[in-house]
Amino acid sequence: MIFFRKNINKILTIILKSFFLIVIILIYFSSCKKKENASPEISVSKPINNQIFMIGDTIHISGHVSDDVLVNSVSVSIVDAKSISISSSENYSINNESADFSYDFIPIISEALSSESYSLKVSAYDGDLYTRVYIPIILSEKPLIKSGYLVLYRKNDYSTYLGFNDNALNEINKKTINDISKTITIDYNENLFYYYGISSGNLIALNSDDLIEKWQVSGINNFQPDYLSNMKVTNNLLFVSHQNARINAYDKFGNIRKSAQLNDLSYETGVFNVHNEFIVCFSSNNYQKRIECLNYETGSPMSYKVIDFDAVGIENYNNEKIVIFGNKNNITKACTLDVYQNIIYEITNFPQGKLQAVANISETETLLLIDSKVYLFNKTNVNISLFGIFANSQSISYDEISGELYIIANDKLQIYDFASSQLLNEKMFEDTVFGVVPVCGF
Image 1 (cartoon, rainbow, N blue to C red):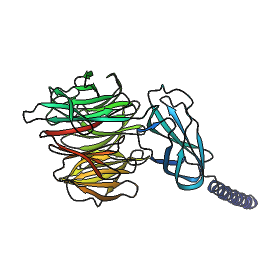
Image 2: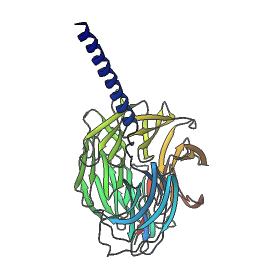
Image 3: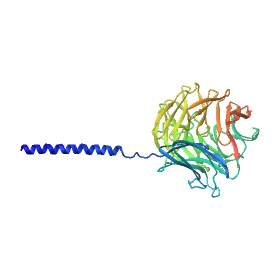
Image 4: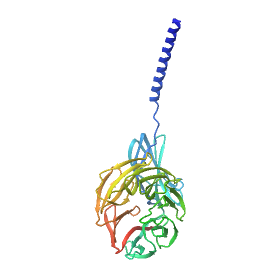
C-alpha cells in the first residue's frame, strides 16, 4: 500500500511537470506567432474632388501612405462609373513604412469618353493587402470655360430672383422665383443648377445657361419655420436633407437613387457630408444633438454620437475621421469623429467668436468665417491662421473648379482668386444676396 502511494505521488508529480511544460511551450509559440498584417493607410491631398482635366493633361498626385510593416508601392489609374479602368496605369515604388508621395501622372486614355463619371484610383500595396481610394474627377476632351455667374438675391419687397451675370458681373438674364430661396448649388457635369424653395418646399432643377426648368420635386420639408434644407453634389448625385429625418439623393432626372432614414423621426437632419461608405449628418431635437452615421448604400443608421453644440459644417478629415465645426453659446467649437470607432476628439484653441460659415478648400484645408474674419484651418497639423478680415461678411463659399472664393456681405458680393488672394471683382447689388455659383461649360 505504501509502495502504491509513493508511485502515485511520483506519477502525479510527472503529470504536473508535463502539464506546466506544455503550457510554457504553448505560450512561447503563441508569442512567436506572426502578427496579423493590417491594410495600408492612404490619403490623397491632390487632385481635389471634381477637378477638371482634359485628355493629355498631366495629373499631379500627392498624398501620404503608411503601413504596420512596409508599403511596397502606390499605383494610379483612371476608372469609369463602374470602376473599370479606361487608362494606362503607373506604379511608383515606396518601400517605406510611412512616406509622403508626389507624382506627375500622364494617363493614356484607351477609349472614348462615354461614362457618366470618372475617378482617379490610387492604390497602396504592402506585399499582401491593397487599399484603394477614389477621387472623383471631371474628364473632358475640351477645356472648361467660365461664362459668368448665377446670383440668388432678394429685393426689399421680398421677391426673389435668379440673375445670370457675365464675368464682369453685368446682369444678362433674370428669372423671378415665386418663392423664398436661400440654398443653391450647381452640377458642372450635367449643366444643371439647383435651388430649394423654403415656402413651397420644392426642389427645382434648371438649365444653368438659359434658366429653363428641367424638373421639380415637392415635399422636401414640412414647412416648419427657419428650416433650411442643405444640398451637396457628390458621386454624380444631388444629396438633399429633408425635414422628416431623411436624406435623399437625386439623379439628373429628379429620381431618388438613395435614401437614408434616421431611426428616431423626432430628429431633424440638416448639415451633412458623404464620407467613404457613410453619410454623416448632424441631427437634433429639443433635447439632444447628434452626429449620425448612415450606411451609404442601404441608408440604414449605423451609429451616432451625442455632441454639445450646433453643427455648422461637416468636412472629411482623413480616411477614418470627419471634422465637425459649430457653435456652443455663440462660440466656435470643433471636434473630430472616428466614424469606425465612434470616438470623439475635441479640437481646442479656436479663435473666439461665432462661426458663420464653412467652406472646404481641399483635402487638407478649410475656410472658417468667424465674426467677419476668415481663417484657414489646416487639417494635417490642426493649425488655424488668419486669411483676411472682411467687414460685415455673412457668408463665404469656394468653387473648386475655378478656384474662386465668394464673400457676401448683405448686398455686396466680392470674388477673390483664392491662390493669390487677389480681388477679381465686386458688386453692390442693392438687394440681399444669398448665394453665387460660377457657370462653366465645355
